Image 1 (spheres, rainbow, N blue to C red):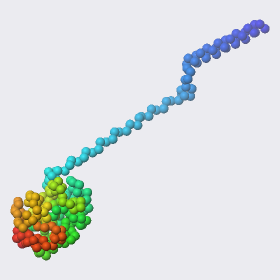
Image 2: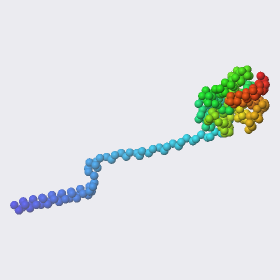
Image 3: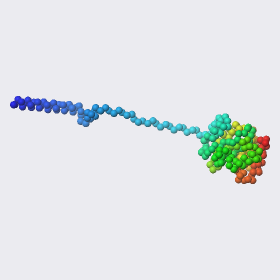
Image 4: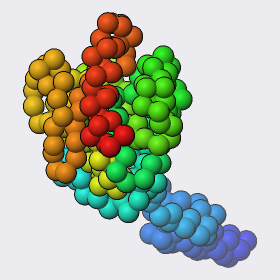
Length: 261
C-alpha cells in the first residue's frame, strides 16, 4: 500500500514539473500581448501605393500684347482682300472687339483707281448688319454716290478706319486707331484707290497726318503718296445740320474732278 502511494505521488510530481516546464517554454515563445495564432497565420495585406496626384499643369502663357508693328505684320501677310477681311474680323488687339456683333470690314469690289470713302468707326446699325454706313447715314451716302456722282455704290469702296464700334459711339482713342489702322493701310495697298474721301474730322486728320478742325482742312484737294484726298463731312453730321449739304456737294464735285469723272 505504501509502495503504491509513493508511486502515485512520484507520477503526480513528474506531471506537474512537465506542465510547468512546457508553460515556461510557451511563455518564452509567445510573450504577453502576442497576437493569436489566427492573426499570426494571416498573411499581411499588400501595401497599397500612396495616392500621389500629378502636379497641376502650369497655365498657358498669355499671348503677347498686340502692337502696331505686330498688327502691321499680320495685315501684310494677307495676300488678298478676302483673307484680310477674315483676319480683321477675328482681331482682338484691343477691347473694342468685345462690342462687335457682326464684322464690319468693307463694301464694294471696284477696280484699281476707284474712289474710297473712309468713315471713323461702325455705327450701331453697321454693327447689326455687318455693312458699313447702314441706316439713315448710309442712305444719305448712297444718295450722294448714286444720285450725285452717278455711280453705283458697288463701284466705290466704303470702309471705316476702326473696324469695331466704340462704346456709345465715342471717338476712337489714339491707341485703338494705331492698332486697327494696319487693316486699312493694307486695304489701300490691295485695292489701290486713286481718290480718298474721308468722312469727318477724325478720318481726315488720320489721312493728312494733322490735328486740325475739319473746317480748316476741307474745301481743298491734297496729294499724298500718289493719291488725292478730299475731306468732307460725315453723313451723320449732314443729317444733324442739313445746311452743310451744299458745302459737302462742293467737296464731292472736287473729288469727282480728281477722279476724272
